[in-house]
Image 1 (cartoon, rainbow, N blue to C red):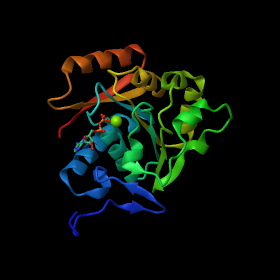
Image 2 (tube, helix red, strand yellow):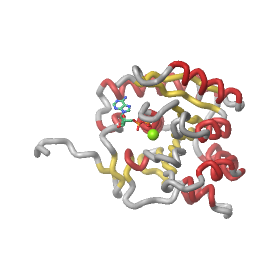
Image 3 (cartoon, rainbow, N blue to C red):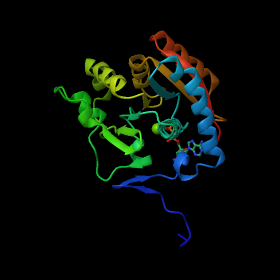
Length: 225
Ligand SMILES: Nc1ncnc2c1ncn2[C@@H]1O[C@H](COP(=O)(O)OP(=O)(O)O)[C@@H](O)[C@H]1O
Ligand SMILES: [Mg+2]
């Protein structure tokens, strides 16, 4: 590595932010501008209508679901919205790669498996101003079973009470039904697509499934990279 190469930014005390967090690493660049345009849209279509939860879904892996979820969460926190980012991908977690914690934290898996009345104890609060994170807490062997628990609904009620926006990343919908379950509990879903990657038929199928489960699809995003 050259001596002049930029290092990932470190936030106190010791979370390390990936450079793919363009809303922080390159706030003046085109990709960050695109995220802010998405933020404007989500604000107008969703937040200002009084809705405070959003599942981010993609039909297949490598579409950019985690990238969009994390950057959108940061962009929302940057305008003063008290934001909770949850890694709902219990199969292939990614938020811990983008906002690297100092040590492996507990998170959604442990929260859902717990039988105690503690939900907020699994949230890492104010990692950045207005941004809290609930990590996946590893990759449990029984993700579907955990997400099916009533506790997930109670957790969401707590999040809606405590945060202006709860935004949740999900696993690729073609590999499991977790994204459908998460969309149905959160009530609202946004679909990420990728140019020359996502099949139109797969998106139509996913939208149909999410709607059949009673959730609203607030829109689709074209992630062009
Ligand atoms: N708009 C983008 N610009 C640049 N890189 C991107 C963009 N969207 C995604 N990526 C990169 O592509 C890879 C896959 O994205 P990721 O968000 O992990 O996909 P998914 O969560 O859908 O599997 C990651 O390395 C990510 O940093
Ligand atoms: Mg991902």
